[in-house]
Length: 453
Image (tube, rainbow, N blue to C red; front, side, top):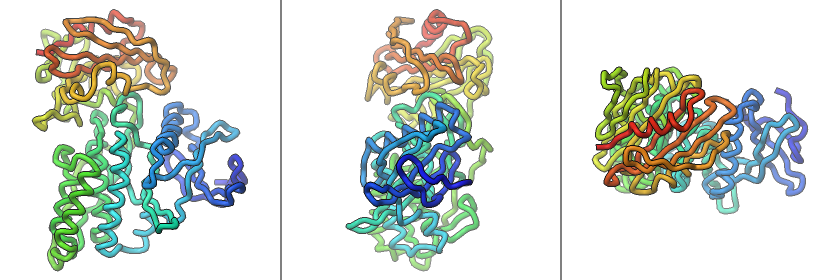
């Protein structure tokens, strides 16, 4: 890879690193006489409008949050070939990956560092953002007048939890990625980052292994209460983990201070990592709003052309089938998945194939408790699509708010609809990829077939 002489007004000194979506260079700002990190979108992704928009969203997000625990953004620009770049503060202390390569950390500093990392991720969670790829390479260190700071970096896969719908790339790093990130039908929330924090803890406090995903055990001096926190954080089921990074950090601090870091000396923690099956899909384009089918869903053709998920029943369009019994990642007050389903001529394939029509239907009391149909749809923009005026329609006793998006790439049309169930039983959310050439009548007929008992 040739080193460019300049990027914008910055003189390039050397390559800092490369990743799946970007290359990072060390640059010099002649005006401020300081070094900066310049992140440039990879050439092989420059044609993809969705990836380009997500790249710029990361810079906008970091700029908007502007927090001392996150990498600061100084500005953005564009290369002559059209690729965008972001100018970031240079983390002169390197990454956690580099430090771990030199050898294991002592127990007390490792615990302190893990608490600091959790505090940085908690900043994201407070703003409704999931990082999705917490690894040693994304934990950076920067020197300052008050000492060294820990920074959370590389939010390229992060997105607002409230906007977790639309076309996106589902990915992460094996060994640190939560099990549900392997499932293209799963909604990923803050508990995925809790899993990543737990795996970082195992890496910091564990006996060194050849690779992150290998069987791991904690060092003998790790207190049992700390080991218990990491076991809960890396539970296979999201419902069994801490709800977010703040809760994880609080539990870790209590566990560490209650034992003084010595109660577990000379004792084995019996730690074993989560064992799970990789689907072998590193990144797949899906409609995340359709991410709600339960893992044990069965596909059937009902004689009466209906499908039921809990109190939710739908009438299936001719030739369509249904799958699913729960909205993955969306839990009710009883701790169980809220009802949801996917319907399509081929429910298993439609999310990944733009030519297949289909729809996701879910019912959520927890969403209805925090927002209404208009607010919920406003949280779910499709950045690379053109939005038509929102319309309203009353079907089967439900007042629906319907938003339509016309897209130049991928699916030509995506429809989002939301309404309140009878007796305010919950918010009904429907995301539709209509058949080619169909109009509002198809959408209204499908909505008329959605019933809540």
